[in-house]
Image (cartoon, rainbow, N blue to C red; front, side):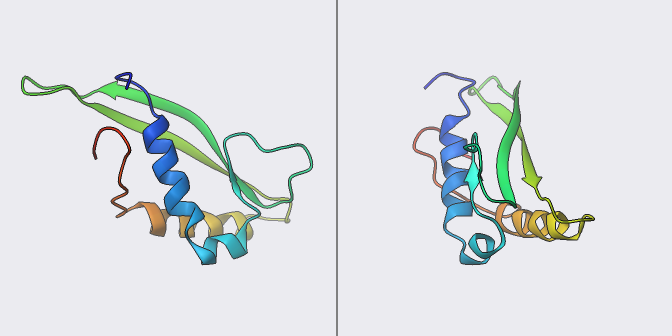
Amino acid sequence: MTYFNQMPLQRAIFQVLGGDTTLAGMVSGVYDRPMQGTAFPYITFGAWEGQDWSSMTGAGVAFSVLLQVWSREGGHKQAALVMERLHGLLHEASPVLEAGNL
């Protein structure tokens, strides 16, 4: 695994979000890059940033990821409800990574 490789974390986030039936009823899906014509609303992964958090005892990186909610509904209510669900699912999540650990 490359030190700044976010893919294990991205796959873990996909797993957490994809396993939630409430979120599945709110959006058409979670995508790295949606296909043209994807039904709204949906969620995409935006920019990733990794910062070195290594110490004298081990290597580490702190990742930040932008999750984007795309909606065509007027106003912000639909997107805000989806964002609230995302926060609830991810804030205290402890996903298992295929490489590395949280």
